Length: 368
Image (cartoon, rainbow, N blue to C red; front, side, top):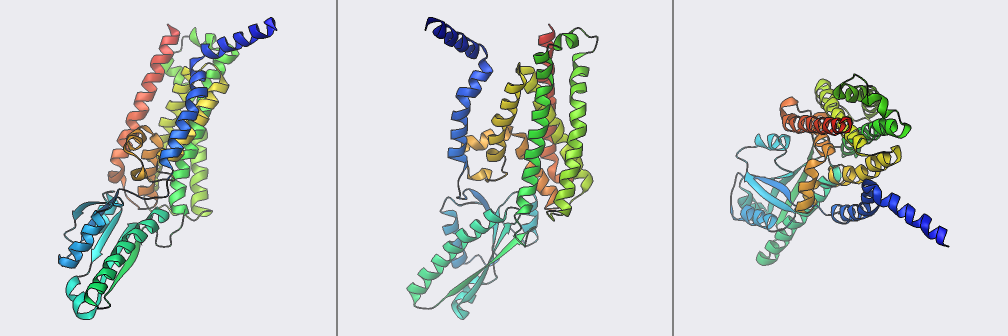
């Protein structure tokens, strides 16, 4: 019995000695439960809303006020012309635009019929459908109250229009997201075991005494996985276009440049993980399990970021896949150019530089 307790004590010492593994074992359940508890929701909240209202009468103002007086929509501004509608969607300023017909209230009083159009971003057809339902219910509630008040069967007809995805194909939303998840997991996971493998096999000492500079060693580790990632990128794009029938509406060159930048970020993240751990198993656990949940939940791949609590929205800013997926949708689905994704490119490029710098510093520390 004493020998058994000694072995148990020894095993506890091994566990407590590897603090990273201990953090994964104890911290990952808390992280997973928090992310799944707060991020997963079928509600759509805090959607930015713009209004094009050429009439500006009492009826339209009442409807707008009712739309603003709930958690579903955040009123941003009035549009001065119909030409600004698509531009607002291109810049990502709005998720829905409410368009009223001219002389809305006059038409409602004299003919009993008035038109309002709800324009949403069809790149996420599920969210667009929910937004249309929310807005339609609010408008129909006002119509019912007005009819009951005046005893006249007024009819307000909301018309729905989905930009970029009028056929409401789910693949238009999921393909860019899945691309980000696949590239992140494969690049980070495979690269994370590269240096860890050297440590585990005892060949790290050979690298440490070699005349090669740390930066050269790091890049030499990353190049093979960069080539494999480019092959994966080509495979994903070919399957997206020819199998899933998701067209590349924008420039292929811009899309490839964006994807290569994201691949560099993923490779740098994998290298950073590999410098922090001592075994391939821990590297796989960290890069696989610890990255999977944030990518799925906080990148906007499945659940809109604006629906989440404020602290998760802030946390999502450090998830590289979020910026790649946003930019990828702009290029693939909306057909936008490089100028529209400059912000995302700058953020991803900065992340790559920071991650490589930190990886190099930690590798130099090991040299010393």
